[in-house]
Length: 249
Image (cartoon, rainbow, N blue to C red):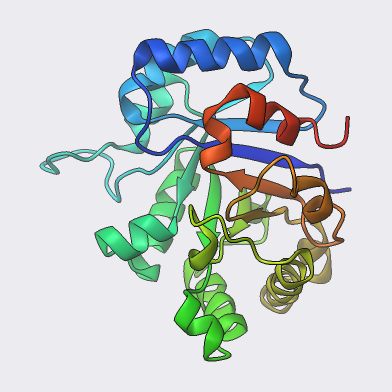
């Protein structure tokens, strides 16, 4: 049975003291019936790692390099992340794709490297508004699944969560209707079944991301193919992230 997986992507927010304050609020006031991850910026990972050690709050990173080491100025390797206590990494986020030019091939390379070093992966996919309005959403998302998971084995899928984030709904206040979101999740699950097996399709966790809030999380999570949420803005405050963490309390 798939478990609910709620992840908070802090993006480029919070200094060390601000990060520790939020973590304390989450640990003091939140419950962890569901699988919960937070992904702070690189600069506060070490501090947050100390704060969450021995708790049920999973530490994630927002990105990583395609390389283990070397002359790659400004990059962070999976070895560095593991050394800090990071357990998972978000890869292929639309902001990485659109702003920093990350291609499906780059994302696939990063997924392989993360798995090599025993890091779990939240693999992000999603269409732009133009692609959706052109009727290409299903095709775009299916192709991202194919290319992103190229040469990934079925056994390795156990360490991968897929996050469907329609690009037009990220940070805009717009949210795909639960029905629209579930339709795309169904397409993703079907594609996993075609690439791997019926069992793999049934077992893979697929999150929804894109302006998830306390006011819409229950309706989204009620859909049969939506297993969790990748949360941006609402993950930056305990009063909005805890209700998402505890949507089924």
